[in-house]
Length: 348
Image: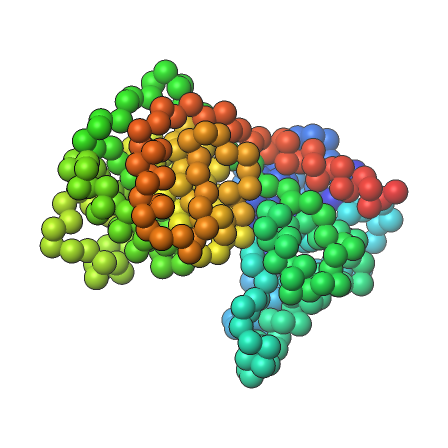
């Protein structure tokens, strides 16, 4: 099977790009003939995969999308092939299938505000092209929550929408017997995320401070955030807060915490949730995170973001008292298998 993946940056650089890279490698290992069209290649790990670099386009971002899309169209026209699936992860127009990774643009903004600037106008057009391109047959969201949001904004997408295909987790699952009991007077809560305000860090601070009244030695570890950007959230009495900044070794971070709290206002998926679950860490997150729809083991709890802090504090205390024995696992080869089934239906 010939499959062309389209992504601006190809390689294990995090976020959506990591999804495309891991999927491409898994598809290649399963026997698919994979080509990648990108602006730039950030990986030399899989030389067997054909990667075509089309060159980086200048900002603004909305214009770079159009320029990249034009280059993709030109390459596809110069290299025609009948039995080929074009799978995009970007704002393209010539694909058969697109994977949607982020919430729809300006989802909750009043209609008139979407058209008050040239930037908004073009981003709306780019989104419509991706969802309703001339060859589009399948829209795959990374979560069913995201699929519902797409359908809410674009009801006409219903016929093309498929069930979500969740990302895999490329982390080594620790030995459950190596896990230590959480002391009744302590433990460690963890938070990770660059967009700390949207991901709910202020709520995490509130939960931690309240729990410290019962657990005086409870610590809070924060990753992915620069200390100076959140210094205003700290109080003089806050003892036990460790702000790590940007980290490269996420496995070590998860191994150093007992509970991940992720009360995001809205998250298309939320990889930190499934990463923590695979690393045998309990998770407390908002139902507005797409990853909350995975089958949570008993030590994973999802609450509506709007719930009062008292509910979140009670849930966090419950998880800190529970013994973690996580069964969640999600291999990229399983993700590739699900996509292959979609590809085959598109070819028939």
